[in-house]
Image (cartoon, rainbow, N blue to C red; front, side, top):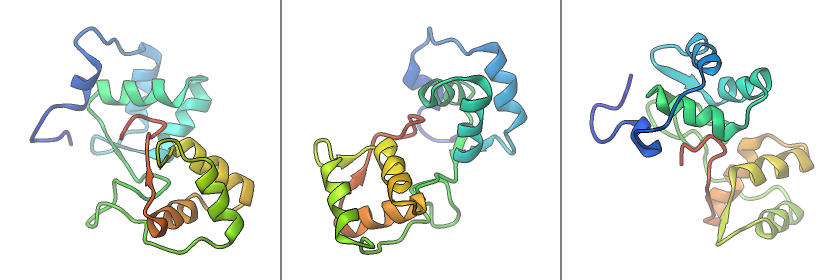
Length: 144
């Protein structure tokens, strides 16, 4: 379902933006009820050898809603976000988060890298950020 109020997702890319034909069908194949999960979008990056930004742009151009952010930040019902505040598991985790900040924000990409480095779920990093008052931005897919 596309947004019923406000601009369409596609409008943020301008009138001249074109969708990749091969990606269009692959995205539609993974879409249900005009929604695609973050995990499915990242699966497409591997299948199509495309960047997350490219896949995210094409999802936007199709006015498909991204759901179930792997960091738990958006796309969950009814609460909208699934992540809850949780103190960092260790001082080292907090230090890694703080070291990766750019303009007091942690990028989605950096959050994923930190999760991999500590071998913890991605949502544990976002939960620590919630507890520390740190915003995660930008999204690799361009959702925020």
